Figure (cartoon, rainbow, N blue to C red):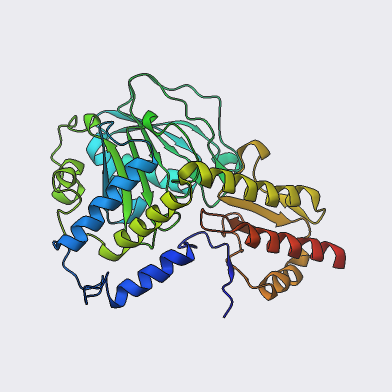
Amino acid sequence: MERPHNFSAGPCILPLEVFEKASQSVVDLDGSGLSILEISHRSKAFIEVMEKARELALEHLGLKNKGYKALFLQGGASMQFLMTAYNLLEHKAGYLDTGTWSANAIKEAKQFGEVIVVESSRSQNYNYIPRSFEIPNDLDYLHYTSNNTIFGTQMTTFPNPKDTPLVCDMSSDIFSREIDYSQFGLIYAGAQKNMGPAGATLVVIKEEILGKVTRAIPSMLNYKLFIERKSMFNTPPVFSVYVSMLTLEWLSRNGGVASMEKRNRKKASLIYNEIDRNPLFEGFTAKEDRSMMNATFRLKDPELKKRFDNLWVSANINGLNGHRSVGGYRASMYNALGEESVKVLIEVMRHFEQTI
């Protein structure tokens, strides 16, 4: 059966060769006679998987040998809303409120200390990224969400106050573009966008920012403990880590982050050019803040929705409906999505224009 053109926001498309290798490992991991689902997480085979995944994550972010540690944890990015504050917030933290996930992170952080919302785009339903805001100079850290999956906005610059650690939720655009990752003290990302299946969360921490809060931190929420145990304090999400390792190896074979950025920029340019050209559609977000990962758009005439939906479903397109907070459509174009899928969607949009 022909694979659908999968624009799902997550869990999402991964490289076909990763799916094939992972499916083989479910029956037999590298000729061991054991499944990846049944090997001990303390076995030599899985320890090598975990070490390789952590090493590749740092390598692709340009953070190897720079004082950072990579961890694969559980609980999703939503657990990191809590963990970052638990480990870093002693007095006051700053947050840029650019969408649902940043709003949830703010809610969790307020349990641990004073939280300053440095700026918010909530009043415009998060359709832009605020740029003009003042950052207090006495923050324990400043938190950003780099890409807003639901609303389709993406940060291109990260205001960086001196001596204030930056924390960034990169769940939906990790490994998608070249930026200076060393400007961040802590990065976290759920695996289910650009890395692997749901179940694992990558956390990359500069060790020097830890150990500055006075509260007692429960073991399962303590970054320092997981660093000491090399992500193996408890049973890790073995399969998700394994598939993430395979995806990071695929990234290495395909030119790394620099190559992904070129591919992603081209895909984004193709779809946004069509949205702007086609008189039946309009984009949701401010043009200067459009995401390369998640293009949000809608029909100018909502009455045409059923007819358009029938067309894209017939073209073997999956996962195009927008989030309920925005409506319309959302084309998620993560690293593994091929340009051909974007072209198929564009053909459907053009054919729809011609039939109206």
